[in-house]
Length: 298
Image (tube, rainbow, N blue to C red):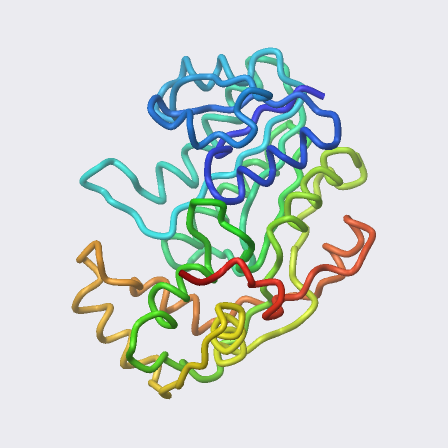
């Protein structure tokens, strides 16, 4: 298949491109001017210049494709730069579906996340509304909802690398939020799941959760990140309500590590059964062990 990918230059996007090429698919990617060097396996991928704000670029990407993968998400928004959850996580999906309808392209795989809902945080509600819009369209849609994703960022940034940078490397004790739970999932497993779903028409109309094999507490995760980086780290229990207060006062600052919405989602947890992922990839998902985090460190 010729697969068009929106969001192919970031952390997960690089692995998606690699998995698609490895499975014998042709890949074309929407690439913002100046970001060409971020495209993994760049010479093997057809690059379509432009971004989501350009109807013409989006249409050029979709025209002639057999399937589309929408892999776009924000950790935080920057409204003064025109980067918002509403525009990126919802309206971009609406525009993509319309471009597919004009071109007659039927197959769409949508990257979402475990725990999306409406009402919810701005992140959750825009992701959820995008799911509903896509599934209600006349396209052949599969929604994939991963838990928090880890893996070698290969020059970008991901969850464990950010934890290492913000909590493990500094001399201060790391923060233990208490009963926060997640099901971390390996990025290569997520990429393999997308390829498997693309090739399996039985997944059309489905919402599939992608979770790793373990439910880990925040303490478990921070400890494994420290071990993966070859460090010992003291953890200091801090009520999540105190972090929420700090975010309420300071999350408008770009350098503040977490937003109020992120604290809310942490508190809600991010867990699921690994059965959906295992069924897609045909093997046991990779666990977030210290050995699996050996890409961390200075």
